[in-house]
Structure formats: structure tokens, C-alpha cells
Length: 253
Image (cartoon, rainbow, N blue to C red; front, side, top):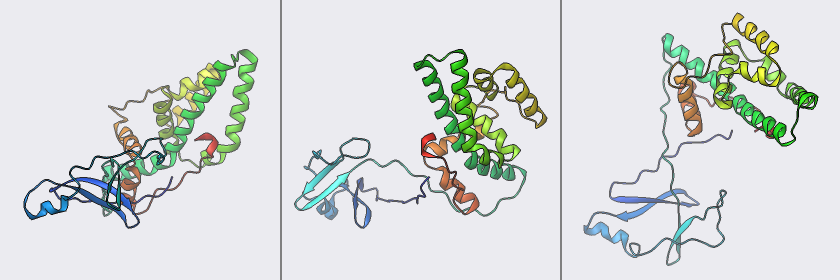
């Protein structure tokens, strides 16, 4: 995941801000809403309509609008709001320690949960498309399992018990089924029962469904921050450094 910095672009209330990108960075321009001498800033702009360039295409295949005024060209786009997190002093107390641990563990394991979602979709799609049944299905799942062990066994072994438990919660969220049912569906009920017993020893329940509005609400909040691009800012505000990068081969992203 690339490092990013939060930039604050502040336009005064007198402007209806539109933003352009220039060599100097992000610059705000706008239409003056108040009268008086400031109205001169708006000269030549108020009747100019945005245009779509024929060949200037962004990464998601959408045209970026622009306004031409004499020799000046201003490209316009809507920028999402950015939340800026303050660099917080170290907090004390049981609840804060619990939250620090959750944020740190989330940063380490959530990328693996996203891998799990991708793989389950790929496996289900392949089984359905190729109509794999019986021995062929078992061979395919076995080959996939061996491949995953070769790639992810070392980082998985380095996870703590609490990180492993969190990963199972996140896999449930991303895949839409509990870890117990995943093992049961792709292996068998005996294997699922065995690993459920092992999980119980470590105080975890593979059958417990993900509850985004209840016990798992703090996890769900971190997922929302991840999706909105705020998680790195939150992590930095708590630990005064960026979260560790989790190396995921491009094939599994």
C-alpha cells in the first residue's frame, strides 16, 4: 500500500471551490459569491461552461472537465473529503490498550482477509465453470491448498493467537461464511470439527458469525476507515508511524 499524506485545501466561504492540479500542487479556484471589489476576481469566468476533452482520459475511463480562459486551462474534478488525524500522545488505560492492539493487529491481518475473499471467489468460479465434482474437485482444492501453503505458511505462522482470531473474524466478513463452514465446504465435516476443537482451546469459536452491529462493531469501523483511505492516518495518529506493509503477491490481490 502506498504511503500518502493528507493535504488540506482551504477555500474561503466566499468561493464555490473547484480545484485544479498544477506544478505547484493543488490550487483552489472558484466563483465569488459576494459583491463589491472582490467581484473582479470572477471576471471572465462566470459564463464559461466546463468542457470535455476528447483525449484526456483518467484511469477509470472518465473524462476530466476543464475550463479555458485565454491561455489558462483549469482541469476540474470532485475531491472526496479527507479526514485529518492529529498526532495523539500515548493514551493509558485498559480500553486504550485494547484499541491499540486491535488497530495494530488489523493492519497486519486485514490484507490476508482480502486475499481470502479473492480466492474463495476464484475457487467457486472455477469449480462451477469447469463443473468439477468428486475426485477432480478434491484434486483442484488440494492443489490450491498446497500453493497457498507455499506462499503464506511462513507469515501465517508468525501471527499471534489474537491476530489469528481477528483474521478469522475478518474472513467471515469478507467471504460471508464462518471459518468452520469454509473448512466444511472445501474439506469435510471431520476436518471442520477438528479445527473447531483446536480453536476452542485458544478461546476462539470458528462457528460464531460476524456481528458488525454488535461485538464486531469496532472491527467494522476499522474496515470502513480502510475502505475510505483513512486507516493509515488513524494508525499514524496512534503510533506516530505508518502501519507495516503486508507483502501480498499480485496474483492474490
